[in-house]
Length: 388
Ligand SMILES: CC1=C(CCC(=O)O)c2cc3nc(cc4[nH]c(cc5[nH]c(cc1n2)c(C)c5CCC(=O)O)c(CCC(=O)O)c4C)C(CCC(=O)O)=C3C
Ligand SMILES: [Fe+2]
Image 1 (cartoon, protein in one colour):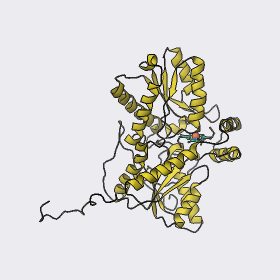
Image 2 (cartoon, helix red, strand yellow):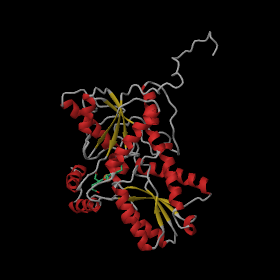
Image 3 (spheres, protein in one colour):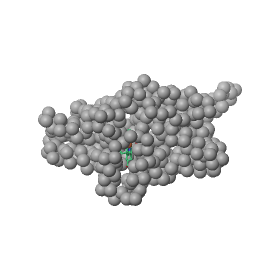
Image 4 (tube, protein in one colour):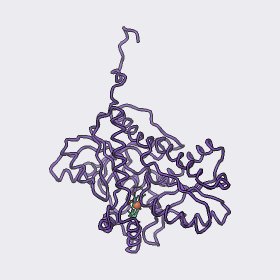
């Protein structure tokens, strides 16, 4: 730059300087939580289903899934591993930021962790939720939990940090890439003679159709976002293998009373239908989940793979993002992106697929809950004296 030209804006950081994470002074990892021993299972299920109208028989059944694995869900250990990986990744990038972890349904509870953050003097934190899609269960309920945790800190006489939740990231390359790799690996694990004709069966958690109908600002966002990711994965797998596989989006872990419609088809019913149609092999890709938690190790690895075995249908299960370095780096990318936005900038947003980057703040009715209206964080139009 010539010496007589003064830059109009403040100069960027010197090369090698730490990336700018202001206005944030902490990052919060937000998990679902799970039981860690047999005695935790019933209280955990009570936490999850409080006020949700889930039949007793379903709870007994799901309790048995947990007891099969010693009453311990893998989910908390997976979040501990993710927390450690995020801390390492940030440190390696020269970012000195405390990282906290709290859950919706089990210890460490968000209420306690946000209170601790307030005690530590945290003023404003970015929140990364371990769920990649829009819907009441996967998005708004977490925003309610974060608002509830701020209220808990206030009730303890503290000033809670402002909490900014990142945009949903199903279409971020740091989530897409590990899912593509996982599908390629699962294809390799199929017998060679069925590989090219194998069907890609993308699996996610079912939700009531009424919940899907109001997901996102215009409805149907939960299903549509999964379809968008599935199309990207299918295209990328075709680019890498030269084979364009047939594919479907199907659902697992249906709950609720039988008369209430949930998204279908169920993965087990679908495997039967594919087999009847003469499909010679299947890769199940659990794109609805960010790690191998109970729905994956029970509903897919135990139940659906057993269905495939009974049918004589070769099937493999693709891995989840877990602590893949690209997924860990996604957290840092969203942190720097959102920090730049909150400083008034318009950073480039990493994205794949046709939908484009989703919103930073949700419209008031986004992923509405028909049953009750609770305070939320991250609203584009916070209701004074109510939202947080
Ligand atoms: C969309 C969605 C995700 C993905 C987004 C995200 O990850 O958040 C998810 C994740 C999870 N769901 C989990 C566990 C459970 N979900 C239940 C119940 C429900 N889930 C629902 C939806 C979702 N759930 C819904 C609409 C219900 C009905 C009750 C209600 O309307 O709220 C029940 C009660 C029993 C039953 O009804 O099955 C349990 C035990 C675990 C922990 C697993 C582990 O321990 O490893 C995780 C990660
Ligand atoms: Fe669930």
